[in-house]
Image (cartoon, rainbow, N blue to C red; front, side):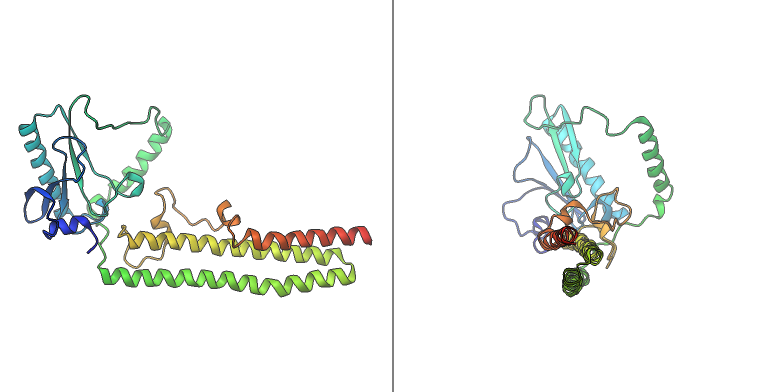
Length: 291
């Protein structure tokens, strides 16, 4: 949190900031590069990374300040409109991991551009299904507590746990390669000496199985590295969670253990296993021709 530019503003450590309003819970100030005249940011004084971490008191304080600033903008600048924008996560263009609300006064032909897609993201039936899913969650909204914001020490311990899993995945990958080499050498060597193409095929099968295992280790390592980055950025994660899906897209509801194309193409998989498979294929062809 020492690196959070908004927390520096809250502590009064930014001499260049132009503060418009401040109370016990919130601060309203002018951004460094306002999109329009009167563009204002409203933040809670507590370091809260995402809107999902907001408790009811913080949410009420931020909302109250947003409405007050909106009224002040309306009566002082007389804009023709107003955008109220609140973004969460890099996919939604959030660049500072501290909850903030943009109030952007609008005039016709100003330089602010907001473009909505021309086509609907879902069909009508899909909309009904999505609405039902959201409605089910809203039934228990009063009992849904915000995700807690971890302390720096808790975050360090959490990162240590995740790094331990990443190290185990890397170690398992190295072990897979170590075990495969003598198995493959024995199978290919025996097949060559005895002119037995079925044994060579078994060697190829062994290479394929170990390649699948190794690619899966790599896939899991990637997912935990994403979780590591998510926790390091202060993203909303249950305390000490080792579930990598919480750092993934919203529609990723279960772990997929089958490697993806990027895993197979990785320098740790394709350059190592493809030559071994090719050797096996050449060996089978050679034995079939010579026998």
